[in-house]
Image (tube, rainbow, N blue to C red):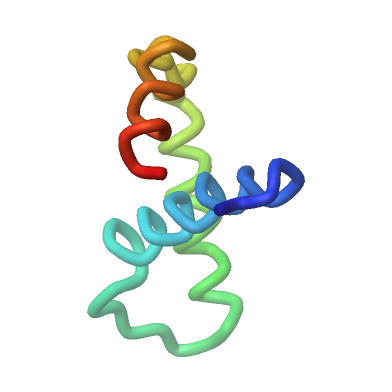
Length: 70
């Protein structure tokens, strides 16, 4: 169960994972400033091609799935 006030954390965690996977993993940085520059560059590139999240499940299908699990 994820409280409604904390559900946005899933999206934040996913974004941090993207930064890790695509920008800083296996990186070598001479300074914190270099790391920050790399992250900033990733965010600018990511935002330049940003697309809204589109829900594909209906409320009814989600409720049915929850009913099966409970």
